[in-house]
Image (cartoon, rainbow, N blue to C red; front, side, top):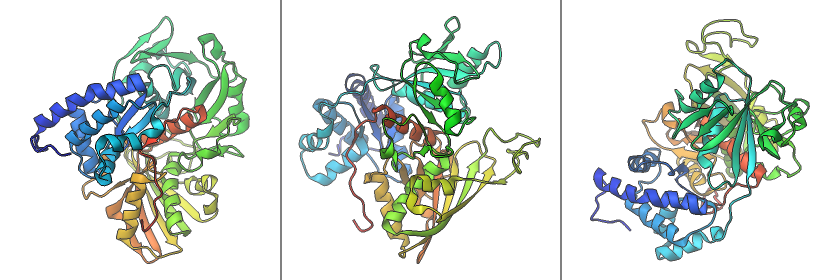
Length: 482
């Protein structure tokens, strides 16, 4: 498939190939509701330069070097086949075709057969209750996913009015982000209608401090899923107040829930979501990051016990400079100190993986970085592990298994935390940092505690709405030795 006439180190030639990809990527999304990506990194909306850079980026993160002309060839074949609504990883299609030995049209038709004739899900209204760090990232993702009026539709945000120019300030925070960069597109306001307009999506801004008294139907919103980003209510009694408002069908909490509420980690226990569940939670960013890796390790080696040490970026509940705080140590300056604090993430793993009940302990250190955290998993296993064998297993899990949307794998001696800003995965195993001594193993798992977690929340939302797309190539069983 390689084209010798277009050398891969020629940037201009690669850009020209990428330019030919752009209309195909756009047409597949608009006409077929097909989302294309490279190892989970979406291509829609990227410039030619961005597409070339993405090819280099996935290689820098440890994946096989991918030629732009190979990607274009596969993309042409996909466009010709015209599959239905789905999520297609072009990098895996390229690699799969190379391994298959089949003619390209035969291979693509075989692998994409489940998507032929697939139709987009019916629209589901979504309301974001709270518009902080996670709320605004969820808005960005939802807006980027909008197409043809199907699937999840962001209809409103609910906030407390903070100032006379509140609407303009909220829009500005959506447009500009010091960590994640500028919003990809246009953000304006309609002050008369109290709406933010982002890439043509009209988002109603509702001002309220009581989740039980809002009439969403007055804004044309019906049977909505309310995503509570505030963290003010964690139990069924508090979150049930949302269900008292007109137009609300279900509630999703972006934090660990209390009591009997289902704590869902997508990829692990999202199959337990029942259509009759009115309130569920998406657990925490750390729980989402470590649970898939722990699941993979437990399946291959068996976990006897373990300790999770989280090196976590500071969050808004800490102080910029020393001041009173109800929590231990959190009153000290977040930008000047490492702060030892508590985490419930290790215990929360058992809510999604009952087989690890009582086997894990955990602690956390808040550090002076604004985003991307690191979980250090020190595990005692039932069977001895060899470092290279363990890493190869986790690499294959990240590429082919049922956990491939959750786990990424990297082997680079140069990566640092900022390299993982914007990662779509729940956690990224740093293979070069792995330590294995007989039955004792130490794993280092990076995670964008804002964006990676937000992607997991969206996946849970899609399951709740019945709109999670077919992901192709389909996953396959990954075992330790094959």
